[in-house]
Length: 53
Image (cartoon, rainbow, N blue to C red; front, top):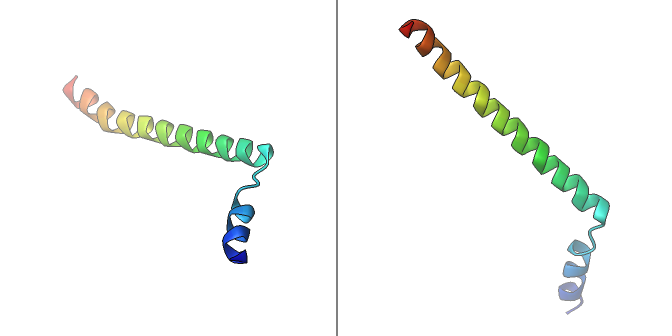
């Protein structure tokens, strides 16, 4: 019975700083993924455009 009450209490009390840090980490990861995808698109399309011209 005590374990059921202790488990949520351990996971719930996030501070605003933790949430802000997690959000910043997610944003930076999403930006890195988008920029790498953009670089991949550039790498895929530039040889095609060069060979076409």
